[in-house]
Length: 192
Image (cartoon, rainbow, N blue to C red; front, top):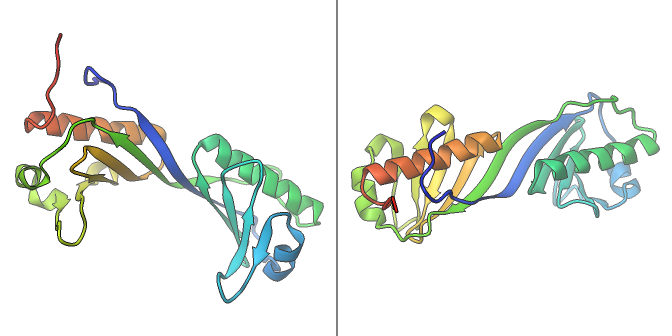
């Protein structure tokens, strides 16, 4: 993979993952029994379980679906599920030995370390790839359809990358954006 002379640091901000244990859950009871768990039907239709050993928050639904949010590493996602599944087993809930975990969305940020003129950039990019309405949202929405990823580009040069399911796809998206911005003359490449 070709990279620009200065590689861009990418930070994972949030990972959303899902798993399911194929059974109906008594969310009111689990809200009371799970360590770090709360259930308030008027506020949220499931159990919100904050785990002390990870940044992940686990959301348990009556259907047996369990969503992990707030993690900022794959390791935190795995640790969050492992900790929750251990608690569920202790409470007598049947959990498969190896439940599948699916990454649904990896939200990351990056900084191009240069300011950008989004009005000019909006003209340079193809209209079907972008949305730019500065009076409604301060960033340019750049859709990388072939990757199913959206990159929000801000005047400051900061990027928010969303829709990715892997770190590799996130890196590919950032490199594509950098390459396209270089083609359009927005990023100076130093060859010293």
